[in-house]
Image 1 (tube, helix red, strand yellow):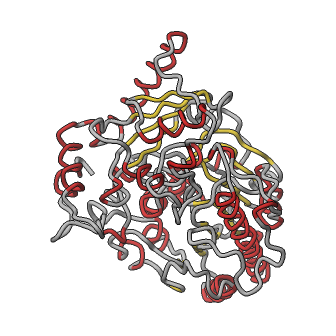
Image 2: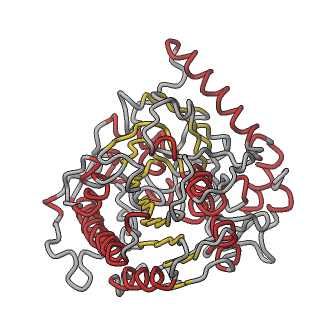
Length: 477
């Protein structure tokens, strides 16, 4: 990025809970999202954007540290005491030291929270707010923070809770025109529907409408501050929706997210970028935007060249991970994709996926848009096979994301794709080596599995005395 004498850009990062690409700017026709559509028209929309792990705390840890969860240690939820290996430099500490005013509105959700909050100048709405109360206060606090920053450049993160379960069809009259179960088409990756799933999907889309309104209020507050023209605005979902085959898993519906970036005078308006990008690229991007030296030890790459319109190949492969999430859902997986194909590796071979058991194990699952085991018996054979693979994944899965974007047909073992499969296996091994991934060491994986298995039900919170995994997984980090 060419250096100028202009004031350093401000950065507004809007993070939405549990939001997939279920927006009209991504082609979803269920509900209008005019404010997000406008943001996309005014900047760059990324069609192939990913998080690193499709659970809240690990996903946020990457945004904060520029490291994969297996590198920083935040492999599960902070509310279940999973913790980083040590105090890493974060976006907040780096930018505050560089003279930025720093603000955080909404939850932190990493452990220890102090790695972020010790470097935040303005803090508001500290809880998760899954009841979605006083949603207008997010924009009010943003306006207050921006004014308090004075002439300093600012970095502000706003975490919006609306699309996180439990869903509310209306809150304080929002949305004005809620949709009902007969008004929506269920997400294609679920594979089937019924009245209960339709109701769940409709409630989710009502949350999407309300989310869009909150984004509009934030952008209006920024405009009223007079600082919009020198502000990089980023909108993302922290991972996909809590639906069958979505949040938690390394499947596309869980790890692929909306990403729109508006940067007046830099990011071309109305462009769509199909390069493989990730939140692992955010910290390198922020360093370049702030005029700071790059950190060559970070695994990500700055997005600035893509924002400026560079069309050269950004990366050949992109990897994501799954770890423990909470103790009873422990089922580590790794996945890697290229421009067309995706490989998923499931190294735990002695059990079904406990997360899938949890989703399918009740006749009327109360917490996810997922068919029950009973309901699946009436589903088409192809859908039954998809769910059987989800419950008991083979060691390797291979998908053609062009022909099969929702990963219904596992192509692993097909002779005609043997070279593709081997190439992706090699790429995955190389990525694990480069990022010092402990999952490649069987003894470490076995020890972590035993530690998670030892956490007693029903709470499955954390081991008595705290997790020991930082002492044996931390590697060189």
